[in-house]
Image 1: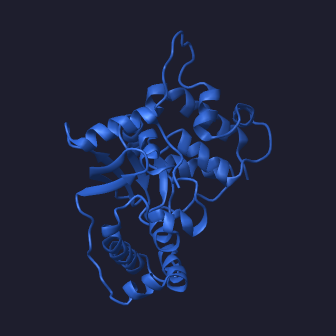
Image 2: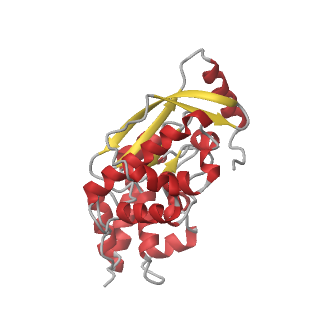
Image 3: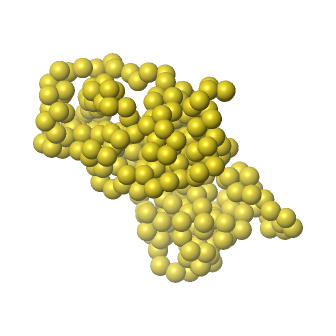
Length: 279
């Protein structure tokens, strides 16, 4: 059963304990509110201010699991706090680990500060959970896919448009890399896992994947430099640094260009152009 009073009190306490800069928002002038305003939390949680306010006032219908997950992410809750929030709302907490989509507060705080850098948080299956604005400008918004298409590896083998950002001469190596990586995840997660289901789908739908899967390759790793063919600024050579959340299996990928290089100049131009419409 939902604990309306406990839920409302917990949310108020968490909201009032956060400052705008803690969640990547500008502070603004003449600020008198202790912590975040309700309308700021609503923006962070992708819901209306009225809907969020009703929860804090112990009114309205029971929030869905999807809404509670959005609130937990918007308020930068830890995993323990997220699970507590779900129980207060009368829901079973989601699973932790490789299938979880809850980005840790630590990764979010880092991501919020990378406003002038392409970066993204992805799951072990290559599903994009968060992107910086320049990350969207570099690769397009990859958070809006649904179903198996959320995985970049799945799109690579089933959607030709997924390959347009990579030089043609590197396509074969990327195919081997994705097949190898998925095989390792399937072995780690076991039969019946989302990784195994993804592999089964690709075996049905991609002849190229079937051929690579039969090779049983493991241990392939991407190079330190990634080459991106952008439709507006051209070829960029970017170093990719990875920060891993061991509890969730999430990866924070940060892309940088060597200062003074042509790629650095093109990245600066891309920041000015903003996010174009990519295929």
